[in-house]
Image (cartoon, rainbow, N blue to C red):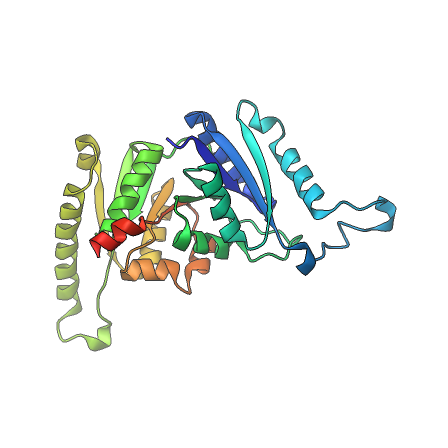
Length: 299
């Protein structure tokens, strides 16, 4: 298990859920928690007058002092029993988070999709997308409260080595779930381009997906008991919709995505629709980038 975790927060209220999950994991793993907030460069931004510089406040707080106070307040007694380190950075959000994770040896970055009007920063959704492309460690995007450990996982599966690596990473981090589903989106041609009946093409695609799914599962390093209860799911539709719909309908705890593949799924998740997808999903999401050396060898 990671000996150090990084919680990236923009100080917004919705990041409270990411804080809860980060503290829960830190306790389970007996890991240090590094909490980082990235502020815009002082020379490029002035804080809102509604919060700073009002005459009846007396001497105004600077942004660094204000952020420090908020971080300490949010942690409070919640962090009892957890070794916590606070870091305040300035500049581009994604690179700053990645840099701190590397400097502190963190094995997992945890964040949320909160928005805070105090700082005119890029929305955290764009930061998550940047981290998915560049972070050397997995990124856990938290949306739900940490009532329990992750019991059900959904892998967005394109049958690639990138997805296999993502699955192995998720199991190493969170342990064997009670339920594992490998969800694959069928890629069928548009109706206007068909020369074969659609139902026949769909049946052929489902049979191929079943065969590919079994081959993929056979190559995974997982316990036989988990292999036996793993569900192979395929459905027609856009990959992001297929995966998010399945996770929603089955009340799944965690969606796992390998972010370095070259399939339709990977391009959709990391393309122009990424922020919309991240904002609409209702399930915690683990983004795993395959190491460059492994990718080069595979390709």
